[in-house]
Amino acid sequence: MWKLVLFLSCLLMINCTNTTKSDSEINNFKMIPITTKSAEAKDQFLEAQRLVQNGLNGNPTDQYKKAILLDSTFVRMYNFISIYAPNDSIKKENHEMAKKYKHLASKEEQMLVDATEYRFKNPKDVNEKILFDLTERCPSDKYLCHTISYLLFRKNPKFAIKAGLKAIEIDNKYPSGYNILGYAYINNEEFEKAEEAFNNYIKFAPNKANPYDSKADLLKQLGRYEEALMLKKKAFELDGSLDWIPEEILELELIINSKPKG
Image (tube, rainbow, N blue to C red; front, side):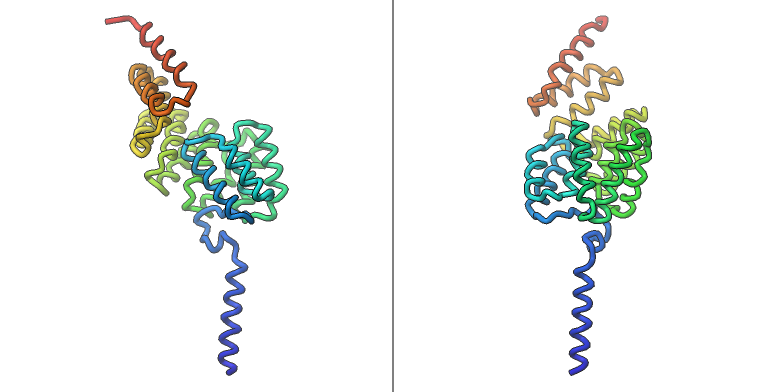
């Protein structure tokens, strides 16, 4: 009988130990956990992440609002908005909310908040060390690598390239990974690699407008105006909501028509 009691006690201890593990421990640190008290809020976050980090909607306010309404302490969503929102005041407002509830989140999510805090206080520092530390803890998180590349492709393209290459190493069919990598290469003046990245973007998202628009930006910069014009028109055919493209088409046509004939 005592053996059975001992066995049951050991089993209970094992179960209790498992329940105290954090999401990140259970996840083996492969992906940043998403800590929320609402499964529906988590779904809204995942949809916002999919839209933003696949170049489908840069500001999915419906998903933002729904998630926060469902969980007013949703640190990960507040942090996501603080990174990707187009308005600086909205970024800072959401960062303050992420800080307020940071103690409720996982270690990895707290690191994201700390990285955002450091960036606000040290805008000229281009290393993003905390975020790169996170890639060591979460080596399978392509969206984390995309975030780093997005934050750095203008001010530190070499580090952005490092993060972008990691994103497509994790998923070599990740379209938006090639997009952000392409812009990082442009800013690092590696134009052949940029064109290769955009070609892969088109390859893995052939029915989306943004890949053609992105490659056209590169070709315009390289003076390949006719090719750029063709791609801009293709992008607008695929998505007429890209309201900046008609003006760019006119600009390219003016450049082409002003060139000497023959």
